[in-house]
Image (cartoon, rainbow, N blue to C red; front, side, top):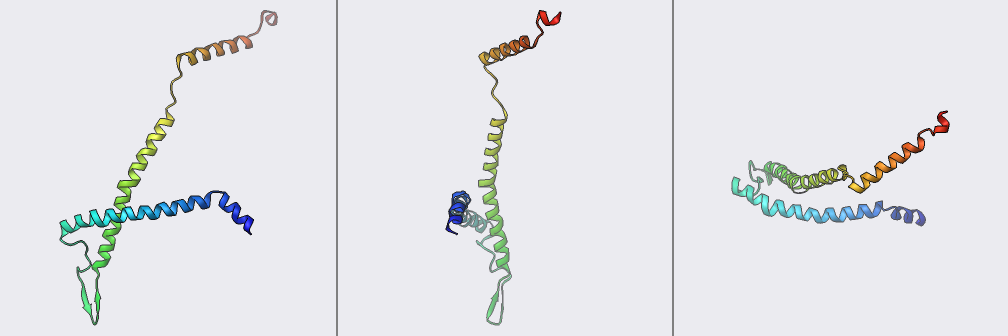
Amino acid sequence: MLQGFKEFVARGNAVDLAVGVVIGAAFGGVVTAIVEKVLNPLVAGIVGQPNFDDVLAFTLGDATVQPGAVVTALVNFLLVAGAIYFLVVTPMNRLAARRRDEEAEPAAPTDDVRVLTEIRDLLAAQASAPTDAERR
């Protein structure tokens, strides 16, 4: 059983997963800070309050029902999704497209390579051409 675990770890999948989880957790803090410290204050400046928890709130017995909390959660979700898309996904897609474009365009051969290619092709053509003895 221990040998199987060693093989699993040695494959690299576990290490890749661990790195992804750690980076994801760290990145979650960055996205949370952007949403809570930048975007939510912008919403508060526009709407007048940083969240919608108290909108349409009512008391039922001893409990307070806050349907606005659902709106707050939806707005926060959209803010997080927008922050990730515009700050991570879009730049990464542009970088990947730039790399694809660089890889897709092979460099033109230099003059010496072009001359050597022509010489090779001429020698190959001469070698495959029938000799005078073979023509008779």
